[in-house]
Length: 204
Image (cartoon, rainbow, N blue to C red):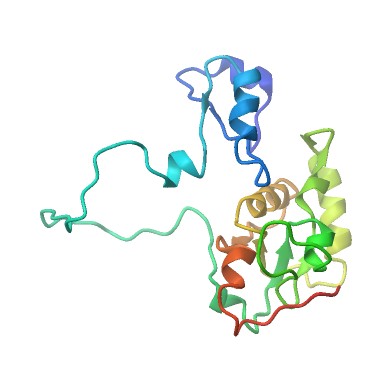
């Protein structure tokens, strides 16, 4: 099975669990409302902010946790990640998934500072889609090849966005297009601007 599956494959899958992660950063309740209006039968709504990181209504404790000694072994992460320090004076190609107006600093509806990480390239994630569906791999390959036309083919890539969500959209699109898996800067722009010493750009 590939990175994407069809509706027909979903129906045929056994022992499947489907999560609906619809979201809209500008309208936090829009995803849940959309799920309430219509969703795939048997799917569950997962609010990435509230269900994954917020108060789930369970008992809490402020005391330090205690645990018996174990044999935890550090493994390789499931995905490649980078932090802010990795992006300072890097040779990696930095890819910004936000729309161009936010990238250029013309508007910033969510964060306190507008602009982008110096040296980054704007590749809005929405352009990976056609009427809500991913472009075919060959079309995605053409799209990113135009964006990377002046770059050596073996140059490493790092994806970011506003808060680390739509950056993963570009990561998936690039992998579908046949590129090596890019790294994710999960903190993205919201984290980058937390340190006033980090440089920002507001031009192409």
